[in-house]
Image 1 (cartoon, each protein chain N blue to C red):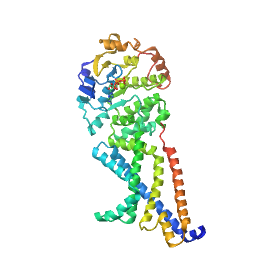
Image 2: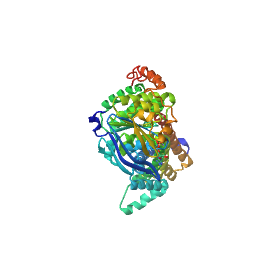
Image 3: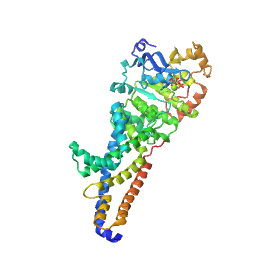
Image 4: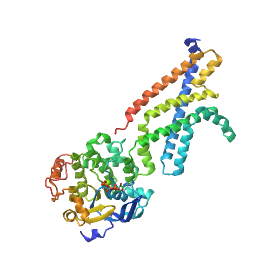
Length: 219
Length: 282
Ligand SMILES: Nc1ncnc2c1ncn2[C@@H]1O[C@H](COP(=O)(O)OP(=O)(O)OP(=O)(O)O)[C@@H](O)[C@H]1O
Ligand SMILES: [Mg+2]
């Protein structure tokens, strides 16, 4: 099979798969971002147990493989009477792991904030949450645009996990498996997906550095 | 001093305040009252506990025992009440501590809007007036890193004033500044003092201290060793420790030292553009 016949036969499916990969990535990354911020707030809160819970979350999900987590979600959760669709399991797996990394990046962003600014805010009568919302999180986000951009790309690559469970429609990696079990797409089928992943990553990288340049904090 | 002022509740009151850093007795039975409109300057050798005392007033430092009252209200150790009382005491730090990601204007309106729920339009209006007063209104849309140290410190003063504090604390406000910027900041502080603000100032600028202080407090090893008028303190210090300390500085005897006067005059026409007249009688 050459590229022309491959695209003739599967072009539409590739487009759908690309769109599915994008959708999964967008949902997972948004969830990871929100969870990552919440975990970070827990980790810097004055409440000991919350800090501990945040640390434990990060230690677990930073150190577990995506495949292991997905297997756990798919096979273990039903025993707890939690029955999620395969799609949901994939999204949970591909959000929790990036959430842990998101929190790590935000923590190192927080470490760049001069403690004097926090003192000034306290001296002005601002509460913990006002300081978190107005000073800590905005500065942490602005100084972690580039790592978060990389995290977005790696979240996209992690969504390939969806190829391990039956989901419909298929995403880019799932489509490669599908083509290779139904036709002799061979390595070419893989290259088309790889190209689409890379092209997306390049665009994400460009946008990331544009944003970084715009929001970077002058010091 | 008229009787009605003497009898008033002090704006800042510390009673038997004790604090240790491990074995170090950094605040040793501190008793201090600052009345409304009074300017108290704390001086003393490095490590004597001046910064700690200043930061203790709004409880940026915890204390081991004693009481702190602001306008008669006892300051709790934590919580909403603490934040509320803190918002009534402005503080200016050695290192400016402006919010690096916000513009100058945003720095000044942040606390009034989030803590006091001042409507934005009003907060902006007041902030611009304050920025004008400290001579940096043209920098309002820049970020802190684009300003000189002196400008940043003047913004920090405006930011504190924007909360309409009952009192202001200054912890060595000019120690991080290049010499040519010191006076522009001292001028602003002097102006705020002249407008009747209650102030507690830690400084190593002896001429300035002598000029603005109603009362000088001399600290050493965590204790208040002397408390007197600037004239009495600088001309006839009571303790050997203070005499020794002062011998390291040359303090001019006139109310407004020559060097400062030239720079004050420069600013009167330039940065401040108001207030300080050509006569050195402040
Ligand atoms: N967080 C801390 N932990 C332990 N010791 C501290 C801490 N902060 C200050 N100290 C010590 O407490 C003493 C008083 O410090 P403080 O900063 O109040 O002195 P200071 O009078 O302001 O000195 P300077 O003129 O150098 O600013 C010093 O010996 C200092 O080393
Ligand atoms: Mg100090």
